[in-house]
Length: 212
Image (tube, rainbow, N blue to C red; front, side):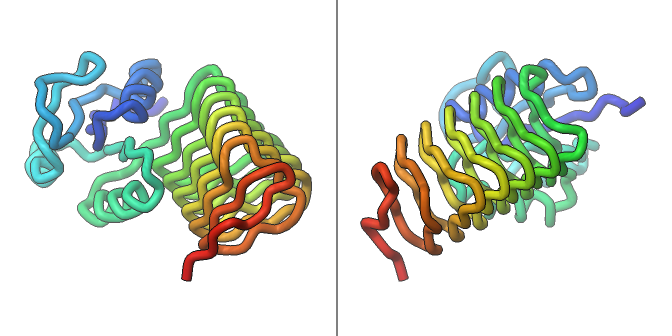
């Protein structure tokens, strides 16, 4: 039986509020508080402990677990790496109302929101977000620090590269590869591969911006 872990949440915005609610439902977690630069004394019923500069002190006080609850993919990836390098173990925030197949594999620092479905042999990389009512079908590979937004549906064998955002309601047919650090706009239907470092929108999705 896993013991109770004291966890600090890094971030205090809307994404963090959802994560805090999920972590409150985990009997193995005791929330120590959150860090933010924003003013105030508490967020979602837990105390604001200061900005990220307090993390070394918290570690010295015996807090060894953290969750980086930042919505922006690049910033979340950076802060997750820094937090892990500082010695914290990154926990997962998985809603009890999500379904995750026994054969699926999950990395560290992952958020899986209510209504999300992760099917057989899917792999979810470190720091990813599988948001409300998103569906990730069999043998999909979701890269590090991706965000699969609410209501997105991925058919089987889809690959999503590191840091990519699939906007709300995105649909992806089976076998598609979406590159790294790309953005697929809300409501897009992806029926052909999407390259790295681009923005794609529409039905069917087409690239409208390519970044160097």
